[in-house]
Each structure stands twice: as C-alpha cells, then as structure tokens.
Length: 321
Ligand SMILES: C[S@@+](CC[C@H](N)C(=O)[O-])C[C@H]1O[C@@H](n2cnc3c(N)ncnc32)[C@H](O)[C@@H]1O
Image 1 (cartoon, helix red, strand yellow):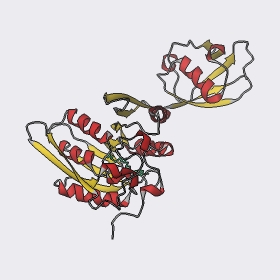
Image 2 (spheres, rainbow, N blue to C red):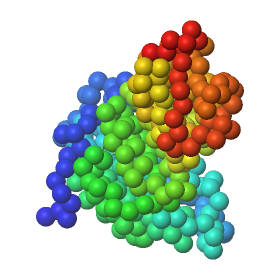
Image 3 (cartoon, helix red, strand yellow):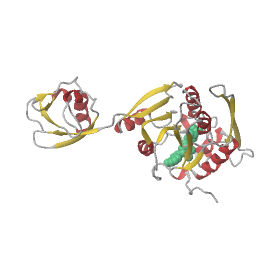
Image 4 (cartoon, helix red, strand yellow):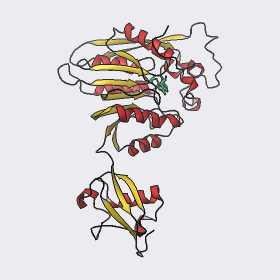
C-alpha cells in the first residue's frame, strides 16, 4: 500500500496542450498499453562545482512520446526541465557557503530535484508532487541516485503548506489556467521573505502574462534568468516589498481599499483605479493628500504614504464620483 494519499493528476487537471508540445505523436497513435516496453531511462552527466567530479543522473519514467496517454504528466520528462538544470548548474554553489532549504513543486520523475540535491550539499532538498503514482516512481528515482532528498506529497489547492523555504523550484507546471493561482498560493505561503521561486516555463496553453499577473497581484518581483527558445525561459520570483492597503476616498464618501506598493508612482495608482475600480482615465483624475495634489511621476513613499493612509480622489471638474 502506498504511503501517499490516492490522488490522480488526470482527475484534477488536463494535460499540457499537445499542440504546443514537442510531440512526436501528435495524433496520440502510440498507446502505452500497446507498447511492450513503455519505460525509458533518462541519463545525463553533469559536472559538479568545486571539483566534486561528475554526477551521472539516471531517472526512469515513461517514454516522452507517450506523455499524452499517461494518467499523470509526472510519469515522464518535459522539456522545461532541461532549462531548469542548465540554470541550476550556473548558480553559485559552494560546499561551505550556499545552502538552502529547498523544495520542488511538481517534481515528476525528479530530473531537477535530484540534481538540486547534489548541488545543495549543505542544505536540504524536498521533492514534492500531488500524484500518487508519480510519487512512488519518484521515491525509486531518488534511491536510484543515492538518496539525499526527502519526497513528500503536496497537492496545490489541497494540502496546507506547513513551513517556509529559501528556494522553491518548479518546471513545466504552467499548463492549466485555473491551477496557476493555486500554485502561487503555495509559493506565497511557502517562500521565506528572502527566498527565491525559480520557474522554468514551457509554452503551453497558458500565456506567461497570466503568470506575471498572478505574481504581481501578490506583490512579487521577478527577473528572467535563463533564456530558452521562443519565450521559454527560467524566471526567478521574489517576494517584493509586499502590497500595502491604502484608502482612496471619493467626493461622495465612497472608500476604495487599494493594494499598492509604496514605491508605485501616483500615475500607476491612477491606472490601477481605472483598471480595478473602473474610475475615469488617469488624465482626468486628481489625487490629493493633506490638500496637496499628488504629481504623477512621484512615488507614494515620497509623499509619506504608508499602509492605511487615506488619499482623496477628485475629477478635474471637481465633481468626483
Ligand atoms: C508537466 S509535469 C512536469 C514534471 C517535471 N517538473 C518535469 O518538468 O519533467 C507537471 C507535474 O505537476 C504535478 N501536478 C499537477 N497538478 C498538481 C497539483 N494540483 N498538485 C501537485 N502536483 C501537481 C503533476 O503530477 C506532474 O508531476
């Protein structure tokens, strides 16, 4: 009996869009039940830093061409995982310095998490996934490569995040639109204030703009760290300074609670009021604080705005709404 709770990915999400995949079997002709030898061994040799020699990783999963027929996408290897490993190898690792409490989301066959555990020698590495069959295969792959990392079940939107991590990595986990907020809920809860969330993105049926919107809502900041082909990159997200809620009061006494960054310009706030609250175009808005009109290019903190500050909204013709 499995030590993991029964949870089958296919019951909760759909597959990455086959039209967007490097799919050698776009019509789904191959079928894993007809394949007498459905498994494959993915082997890569990496040079470890500080002259620690070479590490040949060998992980077992289903053949990539059968990806569309599997009950979980975690039973084979997906292309963003290759970008992730090339990024991980470029990070500065040292057996005496860099160490992280690191965690992987949606580890699949463990192609990234296992390498991470060999780089993060001073820290701890936890590999997670939601799908039961994937987790069982993952445990075997970890053992096959000498252990050194923990495997846990973590289902986004189901399991509570019990602790925080300095580094969270995830590859090719962006393919179902409604899962993106669940994934970011886990990251928001699980990332330490100084932590990094490393995401290797492959172009599927979710546009990367949606990922950025989700990060922005949570006040995160990001940078592109590894350039892949055709908009498929490795991105690093950090918790920003966080959103502070301010109150915008209109002439009629309506109070709008708005999440802003204190480093936002006044113009950005006006745009937000337009986009989020449906107020008039920024060039018709006037924002006031203590009787002073706020200038578009200045930032909120330049005016001493803090969490909970009330600013006043007027229209240029002084009617407001
Ligand atoms: C496309 S695979 C990527 C696997 C691996 N990271 C790679 O790049 O080869 C997506 C992974 O996310 C996992 N997953 C999908 N939805 C999940 C959820 N709600 N909670 C936890 N894991 C989930 C799947 O089981 C699968 O292992």
